[in-house]
Length: 92
Image (cartoon, rainbow, N blue to C red; front, side, top):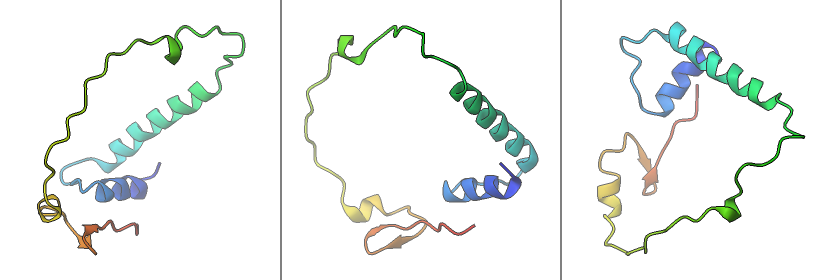
């Protein structure tokens, strides 16, 4: 991941890069990406599953519907909106 991609990610997340070392962030992202690529190369064909979702006994809480906030309240602090929705700038 290069510096421009780091800047794009931060901009899309509405995060500030002020005072941050973009080169260092780029290096850290690349370490994570390399680690993930290594995980995908591990041969797990002869590895027995240790836990199955069907064996999992999770206790779920009962959903209780509550009053929602209004659309105008939800969009109140949005950087940009369009047609009553959040608007994201996808350009680099």
